Length: 441
Image (cartoon, rainbow, N blue to C red; front, side, top):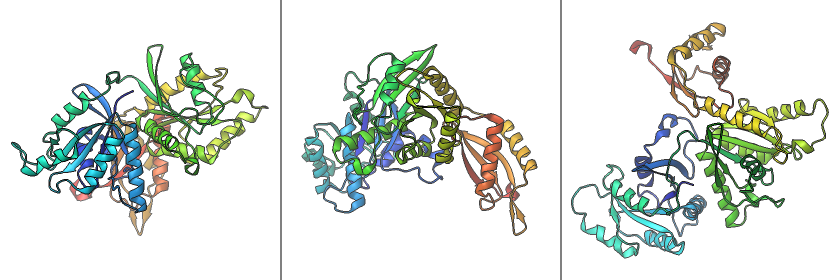
């Protein structure tokens, strides 16, 4: 799998600025929608044709008892455990602090490959005298950078990529469909991947949670390339009491972040559990194409209405994901597994689909003629035009005279009309409403 690089350090040393500088912050288009920022942010990055995954972590305050800071430290520790290379960020303006020393000790204990970055060296030429103090951390030669201006970031990335494991896969296959197979423990995720690959690549056992790590498997069929990411089963937080377990959940969430398509495995015998809705909710929030694979269908006692009734239950429980596809499979016998592959390909295409501005606006005009936009106190909503701003998931910006008049129910109506016209099966679609002054038009 791709090498993982974690940026760590105490709060406010410029970690996020460096993260954005390296990744190019492609997600900025949806920044004005809530919930974009999370505890750890993952993004694919590339330097001199070497592809890797970058993790931005919350600031580490080693001695803090504050609950939020303790959580941030835990998240950062998990990122460190996962990472192949760790970038420790410090700040030349503050000099070496006690916190920097504590974090450096933590990294040395973890026996990780470390690159020490000294931020806020904003001028070219020789670094200031204070820079040399950072040799005292015992982490080798520090690298002077300015994450705001981008100075020294190339030297930093040269050193980071130089430390990648020799067997790391740093290539990037654009055509490969990345599929995260997620769900609670023992739902049959590993069995499904083994059936597709035709080999026992992943340990399968009836003990819930046998798969400790996310494992990448490349697969090709009829010229289509897939990357299957088998994830450790996600459990309820209360049951995650050992570090290895918590680490597995981190890997599962990272797998969702890295994927194009999420196959959410549901155990047909157990039915839908609260844990299934949590896992699906996470994939939905991240804007991933989604398929519900109801597994172990071969051992369910059935009559003529069993499949129809189960489908209705899935639709009720996951009402917020009415776009998701549903398929009934048996990972053990291989029932409908070929159909699942076809479905993965289809929803991936829909997820990355782009439609022209002209076609979109024809549908918007038709929708407004069909159902008049809402009004309030004599003022009526006007939607001037729309345009597609991004794919994966398809994201549309609608320009209107008022955000306040754009009720949620009317946005749902617009979404339904767009889906009716263009499909978008299996993928969420996002709308961003922007106000546009009529006089400026």
